[in-house]
Length: 237
Image (cartoon, rainbow, N blue to C red; front, side, top):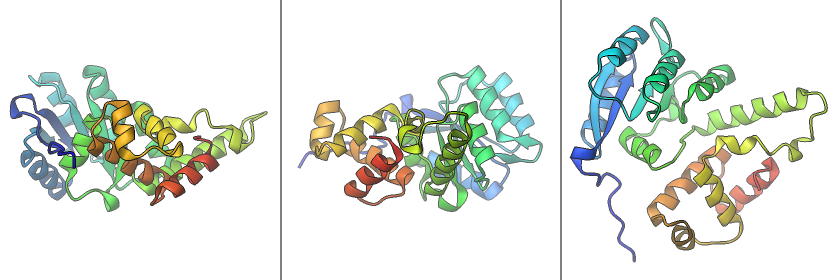
């Protein structure tokens, strides 16, 4: 059996810098403890408001690689923080972790530059692993959030004059998937095994499994067959 390196094997000197903007002290402490326990990550700061985040970005000697951000902050929306981070640090990847799950909040976050959206009720026990998956190209999104975004997208498309039937309106649905996830999905549908996909794409089997796990979450399925069926129904294949 192929021996895969641990997911947090990144040398500490090259660790990804993480900035958290979260007003809930318990949640912020959870983020910090998870990040500090991971050799592949560096804790930069934990802030509790939009104003603190903007001030920190103005004077920070280090640019964050990942932003963990809540949307419901005391003095505004985390979307403002996402926009500011993306403007100052284009390579930073924002990940929303919020109790807000309405379509407006989700779409605003994605439009601002968020690469993932986790509802706090379904947030992972170890946020550090999710952060590392983001830096490996994943776009984590809670199943409930994915369902709502898809439903919102379909309703918007259906309301457009001369809109094509839902089964033909596949061109924008893949935007919920990363390029790599779309490639892996296509290879799954063609019957390739995890090892074969890893070899074809120059990835580790572990990374392929991570992409597939994210696909299952976005499609709200639990097997390859269900993934192919749901993806076909949504026009992803």
